[in-house]
Length: 380
Ligand SMILES: [Zn+2]
Image (tube, rainbow, N blue to C red; front, side, top):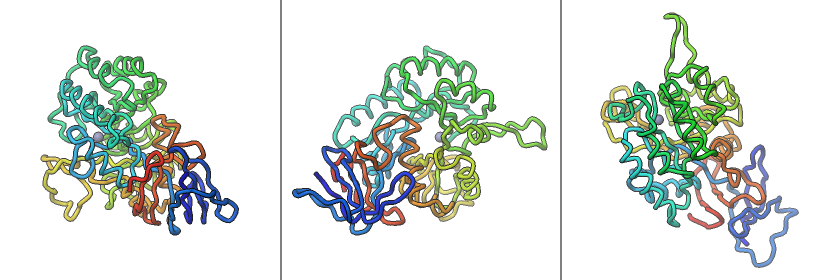
């Protein structure tokens, strides 16, 4: 048994200071205040030295780690994120690939997931194939502009099988309901997200009974749909804000470029503590920094000079969220561990609770990660 002592535990809605936490067989075996929780003889002791212990981070939308894309260097990408505290990650594949390429990538990444060094990869987030061709980085390379056809998409659905956790869709695409139905039939547990879209509230809400419950990078790559020229329309962002059943993904960079700090505060107010999901959406496009973005280092740009995801890892996104909104450590661990776990259906992780997987991070008050534990194994 492992005992982590002298820790402040980050719980879902409070802290436990001066605490000890026990790990047995990769599972959280118990915890409590040190003054009334004796450490049994023979425990391996980790001294947290007064730092915080929180649940491992869960990044459901991430294309890369450091300079490595998941699709061609999955182990390197997974390991980079693991060392930054992300103990669960969904490698994300993008719509700029055609069916053959996506199938190849699924096979390749899945092989890596089976290796011990790929143990934090937990399924796929498919930001593909059917987005609105008007939106998104690298959109000129969208091979999915044609009418939705089962002959095109069924090979991908069959290949990814039950390893897919999320399909992103643009609900305004013709025949999208057929795609959603077939994807759901192949994997009844799968969730859907609205993204790269200018769907109306009605088009989005129509897919909620199938499991649409996530707004992909909320307020990014979404439309406006004004009915009258001088009046603001209602579209994807409004629908995600309105429906309490939809989680809002947020990319939280240091300057508040993906999402303005005021918008972050607004979304936090609207969506509340249970429906915000921080994501990194890390990418490795290496286009030059365009005019107007001088000194920006945590955002990617494509070769057209458009924003193309981030260079963030999730603990940095948490730190930015604290800065921009005044959120506490308890709050950001909810946004980056418990909420994403719930959004995609993991019930064995996401918080400090007896019986859950011992995926943990030890960090300071600014989320500088000192130590990472994955399934009870000390990684860093
Ligand atoms: Zn995207």
